[in-house]
Image 1 (cartoon, rainbow, N blue to C red):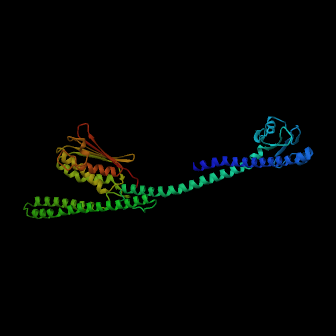
Image 2: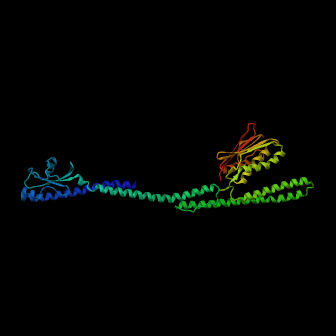
Image 3: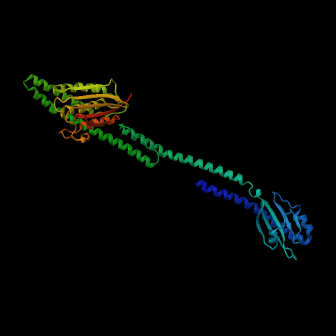
Length: 416
């Protein structure tokens, strides 16, 4: 726009300058002829003027005409019109005529009632000569300036956009769980400051998460002290059968504590390249919980598609989600209430459905973290939801036709 604002007026100015240059030259020629005639006519008469004027043709297609007071016309022959009469009254002027412009200059002679008139004609071609070439140069210059401006603007924009794109990519990677991602600050000072702030944010998040994991691990490790005390108390029991059963329970509890410590110190909950077979995990957890279901007199059934059914999640997280769901069934439904498990692939999802014949969910808000009306921690379904969403799926709860609970978990399917 700036280039156009200068080039367009400049093009008009070039045309005006070219026109004015030719007209000024023609006016100067007309005045020179008028001065010469004012000297020659009184001394040499018409013959002297005829010799001075010659044929009346001038270079560059300019034409000279002299009209004497008695009507005699020397030089280029043109028709006498009102313009000659106006100039004969003593007025010098410039007039647009057919094919160009004419310049009229009066020549005052002693003893004559009217002046002689010198007329110089300038063609339209002469008025616009070289204007087209000048406009072409201006157009080329304008295009070159616009191209240069576009190139410089592109370079400047890249210096801002490219660092912002790097920041965006790094932010997406951090959102996907890569907490070790950093950026090399570049670009304008403001973008560089954002890059430094992003790196500080990532470092702070890693530090806080590390502290949290260590705190959880430390708290879990403290459970070993009461576990040791329980083992000592179990050793004092005289009933061998009871002592063995309690010892097995303590072994299971200790393995669970070890697992909690290990999971707390895991770098990320899930990460790029982590894949688990949901079918295999479901079979294993059904076998584990099946023993307790038989003790409670429950009938249960399962249908699991042939695997592998892989999802981008850690096997421990999926097992924890299965334990939470099956544990809820065994803990919050009456003994003897049957349940069923179905696992199949549906397009880009692996769908796990667990149904029971218990009282169902009293409140749909149980899916929210910490929400429970049965005296539990309210974390089980939240663990399931978090694991499902991390793999690209989700969690839905509802009721069966008989009023029991139905939980549908979708894990994202991967071919890796």
